[in-house]
Length: 145
Image 1 (cartoon, helix red, strand yellow):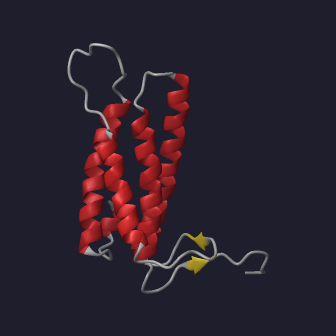
Image 2: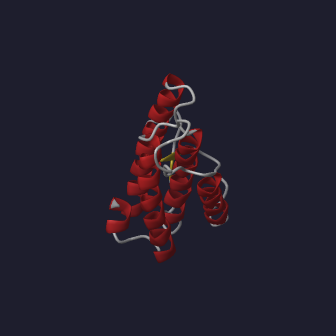
């Protein structure tokens, strides 16, 4: 939401992020609904198609940026910086989800965690696309910075 509100992102990326925001509600619904036999209603579940959409977007946008030759620091444009924040929050959510999956063996949909994994990768790629005009902020190992 913040990355979109900053107003610096291309319209195709805004549309993609809006779709993802909607899908994240689906992820939340999935995670809070235990996987049980004969549920009283049909639960909303993340399916492989959700993940395939993210993977296709990763492939599409990754073609727009050069291969990495260094680690990059979060930053650059405001939109890219917000995408980096979203990426780190998503990674944290992913780690918590894997922990819950381990705790509740078979009681949760593993595809929700896979979705979060692919989403964090996509957000990283989108941050690089957002920085394409100004360039990524490169890590300078061992320097006095």
